[in-house]
Image 1: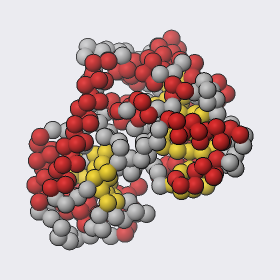
Image 2: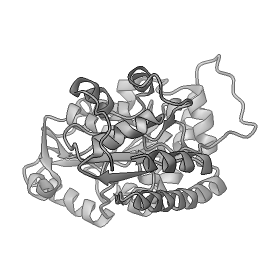
Image 3: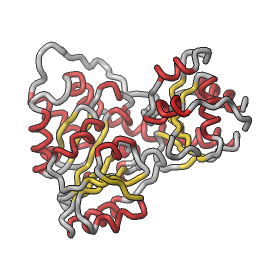
Length: 338
């Protein structure tokens, strides 16, 4: 692939922090074709759409409606309603972790989502997690992992939790991308793993990140603490109404899981035609390892396509799913110019 004009180090830091930096992309690439095609996130590009779901956003949300949402989410996760607390996005859930009374230190598995490292006091490699579990504290692990899509079985994670419990420790599992493959979730097993807390995201799978809705799932001590920290109105009326309806939309959920897997396979095939091998077990995003990853990022950005590069792993490039034939064609044509 031909070498493009690389972005500077200062510019790269903005794009590598997290996906969705369209404002920065427009400033850095003012001549790029519009509209921009944002493939920099792992958000479903075909979101759930409310059908005659109306709400009045004037009054404060009612507690009964909030609990109804949490019951719907619990049924979707496969756990009990009293194990679920709604929060304004899983990002907020991560930033609440130091205040939930979990054993310290909080140690993140690395490499993972950037906020994990920001909220944790230390980090260890994925290979060192079992050894770290014997030291107590709280381990923070994503499953599937972001950005490489590493997927652990719930048996492996429960075994890790058992080791941590023997040392007086705990495990937090960030399942922001787990909705596509519910069999991988530990949420249905929390009664037998009392030292495990799970974080879930509404916006990734349902494609509605702007609604700002997520959940903390776990034991009563953590759930009570989260509710005390956020107060009586942790999420908006829109989040409650749309979230409840979406979690009850079984036909959309089943169809979307199939569609996402098909789209991921289609993206893998397209990338392969350009000599790029995609990996990862999460259909919501694909990770390419290539020595010219930053050049590919720049090449695509000049075509108005935003992807996600990484400072610490300069040979990594993450791509979200194109939404339709036109988006696939645009990506194909842009890569062909390299």
